[in-house]
Image (cartoon, rainbow, N blue to C red; front, side):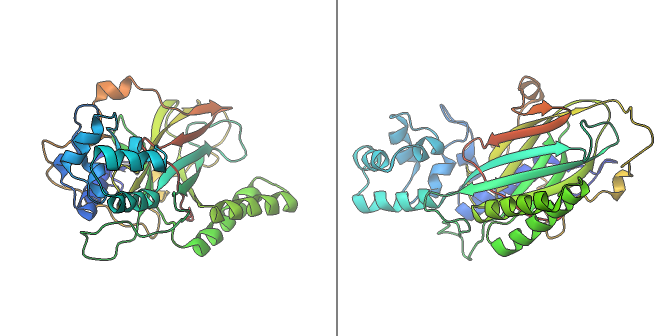
Length: 344
C-alpha cells in the first residue's frame, strides 16, 4: 500500500515502505523492534545478532568488548577467528559455534549496479522517457543462490523476498519499486533475454552484438544476478540525488543501499519525443506484492534509513554522471548483491 502511486508523477511513499519491510524482518526473525534501536557503537542495535543461534543480549555485550559491535563485523571475520571469538569470549561450545557458522554462511550479501539513460541519446532531458537497468547480485558463503532463511520461530516455511526501490529520500518519494526473485532461475533467464533483446534492437545493434549481449546476461543470471528494468519520465531540469534500496523481508541487516546522481538537462531537442502522461507509466510491476503501511510507529524505534532532512542534505550519493546518463555501482550498507528480472 505504501508504494501505490499517490503523486501526479506516480510516486509512492519511501519511509512507510521501508518501515513495513523492516517490520516483516522482525516478525519473521522474532526480534523486537526495540532491539533494533541504535545503541552505543552500533547504528543497527543488537537486533541483527538475535537472528543467530544461541545469541542473547548478554552475548552481544561480551563480543562488543572485542570491537564486534555490528553484525557485519562478525560476518567479515574469518571462520577460525569467529570460532575463537565465540568459544573464548562468548562462552559457546564447539557445536554452538558451528551452528552460528552455518547460519552466517546462509545469509545473503547484495550488491547493486544501476544505469539510467535515455535510449539513443547522450543525455537525459526533461520530459524524456528514462530507462533504468539494474543488475542485483546475491552471494552467500555456502554458494547457494536461492535459499530459505533461517527462521526457527516462524511457524511456516518462508521464502526470501527482495524489493528494489529507487527513491528520492529528500521528498520521501518512491520513483520505482519492483520485487526481485532469486529462486526461479529459469524465469529470470527468459525475462533477462527478452529485455536485453528489446533494448539492443531499439539501439540498432547488429544480430551478433545482440546475441553476445544476451549470452552475457544469461551467464550473469546463472551466476546469481537478476536484471530489473523499468522506465520513468524525467522530471524538470536539475540534479537529483536518488537512492537505491534492495530490501530483504526475511533477514535483518542484509539490505543494500547506494546512491544515484541523476542529471536532467533543459529540453533542447525539438518535438516531444518520448513524452507521455505520468499516469500512463507503470508504477508497480506485475507480480509485485503489496506493501502494507502501519498507522502507528514505535516511538523508541528508529529505522537505520530514517534520516533527518539535515542529515540527508549533508550526504552525497556515491553515483557518477557520465554524458548525462547516471551510473552507479554500490554495495549495501551491511552486505551486497542480488537481482531480479522482470519485464518493464
